[in-house]
Length: 231
Length: 354
Ligand code: SF4
Ligand code: SF4
Image 1 (spheres, each protein chain N blue to C red):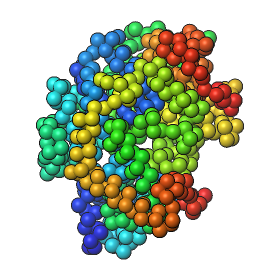
Image 2: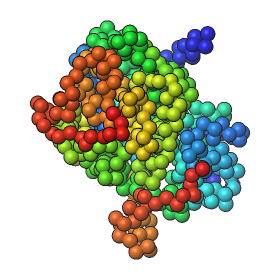
Image 3: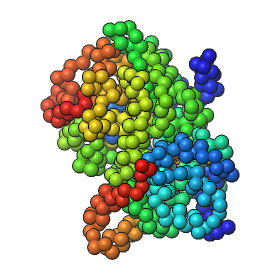
Image 4: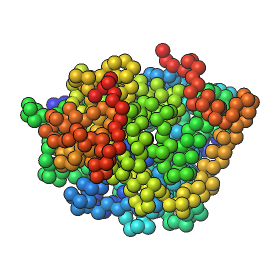
């Protein structure tokens, strides 16, 4: 039993989500990611239960673990009550902790979700927040969102929201004292450490490539090498 | 026979849903894209049904979207969740109702992990005390807001001004129901009707006069996929999954779609627009898409709310074909007006889809 396997076994999601896998492939059959990407959750579960650290390390450095959509459709159907989606979450956490996520194109994208989502949480108290969800980078949100963005205060007022207002209501301003508590939670539970580690790795890579932070962000936001897809 | 068999499965999964006294927690995605749905939920439950549904401005995101994008560790999200539960306790409530499906699934998973691993629960309680000074507590009952609407479906039917019926033909509207994956795929016993035959939306559809459409990809994910949507170069994943669902439902000619997850209606509405724009393909009739609704919007329509108060003008696929069939009166000239009739422009015209 190797060190990586031992660390994985400490993750509660593995404790809950990995019993003896019988390699039936039911999870792969139901998996939306397996249809789209070169992805096979059965194989991931099998690699982890092999306890082979060299193979686990390869997995942690690969694009593979980043293909899952965490829909948990696999959980319902597995005859052994495994949760491949939870196993993937544990693998991703370990990949970030070890710095291995920087070895794959899909892994490097963690800087995007970390910066955007944790930024929203710490600044506003929401994972998604209207003023930072931009039409320019989300054109699929449609012309109607473009209009909402251009007339945001009026539209949200019409819809009985309380955008950035005092008191309860949709997309209200969350009091600073509450945001401070969330920050403190981040600090003592490893949230801040993860944000900082992902940021430091991204800044280092940007420097190596001679790119500004913004240029690097845009690169990993849009880059796609074409080898990921199933067909 | 088969139908009766399904009903038996549903009856095995009837969770207990208290009638009243809830601590309400909002959804990041629903309040961003469908804020009027949350308003309608509170207006219906409080003012039409006289229920006690309490909200405090001090609650926050549960962190679930960041957690399922692997941006924050499990211990972080669990402590944020413990803070939400602690606020419920502080304000004197023990029933917890959340607007978000990602939250709901994560609360179920968290409570299960705490039950299974008491050491973990103790650690989170310590974190909570240290970061906030609040006392650890757990809800006695945890429900999703669609569970409550399901519970109240007959009370709403009794006050209905419109039904899910085509007024021209007298036939029930054909309704696709789409359940968010995290509602019951992880913990089937926590959802009304379980994971294979969830009844939470089907029950509303039937109570309000509609007919539920069965189709092969009924349980397929909408394709959100968290990081698969938030990172631009992954978005094909999200689009491909929605596309698969629409191709599968098309032959069954649905009139409308109802969803219980905040993200699904956004994806099923907007990806229809993208498919129309890029492929010239629409799934409704005469260049229309299939209108997609939240359950709060449908409850509001049934109760006679003004469609523009419900925010239906913020959908990219126009709701008008459904409003026309139900016989709901609306003023097209007022669709994009602001509060008190203020002119705030209107979205650019989209030719590819109505
Ligand atoms: S469905 Fe379960 S038992 Fe079958 S391959 Fe997947 S994880 Fe293993
Ligand atoms: S959680 Fe991941 S592995 Fe499981 S079905 Fe969804 S995409 Fe596939």
